[in-house]
Amino acid sequence: MPEVLKAPLVVEFPFTRSLGPVQSAFLTGLRERVVLGVRTTDGRTLVPPVEYDPVTAEEIHDLVEVAPTGTVTTWAWNHAPRRGQPLTTPFAWVLVRLDGADTALLHVLDAPGPDAVRTGLRVRVRWAGERTGAITDIACFEPYDGDPARPGGHSGAFEDPLTGIVAPARLDYTYSPGRAQSAYIDALSARRTVGERCPSCRKVYVPPRGACPTCGVATAEQVEVGPRGTVTTFCIVNIKAKNLDIEVPYVYAHIALDGADLALHARIGGIPYDQVRMGLRVEPVWTEGARHPDHYRPTGEPDAAYETYKELL
Ligand SMILES: [Zn+2]
Image (cartoon, rainbow, N blue to C red; front, side):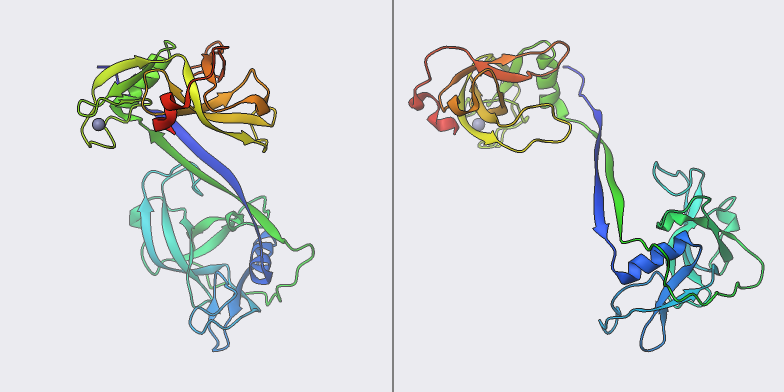
């Protein structure tokens, strides 16, 4: 049995958001080494600030500066920091109630080990050397045994305030396609398309899923299909995708390979987009070094009769 494949996958995109007046002041403040909270009508100071009172839902915008010193209210030790976390050495996640605030801010504490951390520990902000108006402008917190710092009474009005941020979102994981698809991918590297036949209904699934979705039984018998096939349905793509060097418009089609009972999808090339049609006979086009066909092109055969692929739409 071939080895089950696995590969690292990363899904990543920038998330652009605008900042309202409160978040704008908070992040611009961090850039200027000022920590701002917001005062509710009943006199509580919320840090990090929010635009609406979480109890009364009342709109709040009365900004107030708090101290860069505070107290740890709870914590958890992180033995093995992951990529993208605030510190590269082991650290504590902490909730810190800054002096002058009634709520706690989530951040990290640079400490030599978990024995150096406790609820009630006094800490202060360690500012980042370069600040851009982000929560990471606070590089981390550090233990502090001095007096509480006095907030400067900043009003929250700044020159050149931030109006938006771009937050990178990233999901970083290992994907394993499982036994059936691993065999399929292995065969593709030899330019063969191999599906699996259901022992009960005899349908051939390409790509194989390891089980028949109709009968619910495992599939194991390998069956080579194609390489030629028939376009069953298709769509014309008019939007140019970033990072894809394909001229629009182009056609993306469902293709039933000869011998398969499931259509796979691929791009159609070698024919004007407006001449692609249901029943068009196609074959794969491989590029050097690729592990799957780059696209499918017409074979020149007569179109397949609708009766031959109507069950595969
Ligand atoms: Zn079946």
